[in-house]
Amino acid sequence: MDAGLFGTLTNVLSANQVIDLSRSGQFEAGGTSPIISSVKGSEVWHQTIEDDFLLIVDWCEPGERRYFLFAPSSALCVLLPQPDQPIANPHKHDYLELVAILDGELDFTVEGRRRCYRAGDCSILNQNAWHAEGMSTSYLAAYFSIRPSLLKELISRDSRCDALAAFLSRNVRATGEVDYVDIAPRDREDRVRELSLLSDHVIQELIERLPGYRSVVQGYLERLLGTLGDPRGSTLDETRFSSASSDDLMEHIVSYVLAQRRRVTRNELSRVFSYNGNYLSDVFRTRTGTSLAVWCRDACMREAARMLRDTDLPISEIARALGYRGRSNFYAHFRDSHGMTPAAYRTMIRRDCPFSIT
Image 1 (tube, one colour):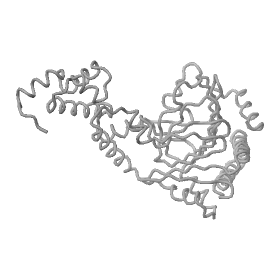
Image 2 (image 1 turned 60 degrees about the horizontal axis):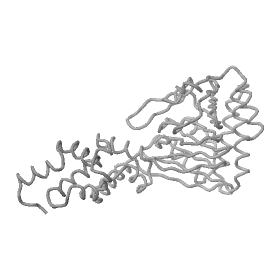
Image 3 (image 1 turned 30 degrees about the vertical axis):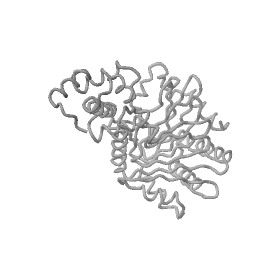
Image 4 (image 1 turned 135 degrees about the horizontal axis):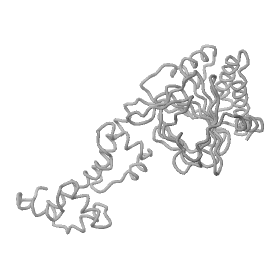
């Protein structure tokens, strides 16, 4: 870690601005503090901030996690327990968020797609991009949260025409699109040094609050965006799509499951479609009101019923063909779907309809 930034964060820890939740971990539930608030939506948490700007520094080491929040109105540090589960619930914002990794590595999931961000990597997400931090035990990350009103003011003073400037201009106002951009440095050490120094300067301004500090902070934000957007030092990878894409994703899931004609798990769908399993479940439940796991199970049991009706295969072979290793789970799932055992179903269907339908 940069010596200046380390010293600044250490000074905050020694001040009387520390909330210790290292035992209760209550801050985790909704991510709510005196500076940031969260409301649970149908799929994800929606976070809001009280000020135009907020800087969060997340400093995690083996055994402890320190969560610093710096805003024009206040500053504090929250001590959290060593993470033994994903660090944050999937969430969205009413602002743009710039994530900068200053040290170590952090797993990050954006719109269900996982990737590992290394020191020097950055990402900027608009209000529609849901995301969540993953499991990491040693890292330092800075989160620059900028409300659209401040962003509009920042870009109005900037005459750049690079790809990042276009991204920011497009996201000054809320749209129906998911839009985020990953920014990789051409020189990782230089980028880490720049990000750490700038973060330290912003924190100092927000702590001291000398006359004109808001304008100084805005100047640092302009410099940050200009540095990241300069193609001489950065490469950008933008992802942009309509929120309607989740409907397309659900259609692909349904088509895939029905085509397999066997047991399909959420883990398999996660591998096939390269999306986080929780995200797939949220999309499916939001669009259908039904659990993805239950729907997949029932689709498999419909195929089981067809095989019981149209073939003479022993029930144990049908279970194996559908992907069940033992009979007990197969029997339990079939009973949940059809209200009777496979044997009873075969007897009933052949009695009521003696001719096979192929």
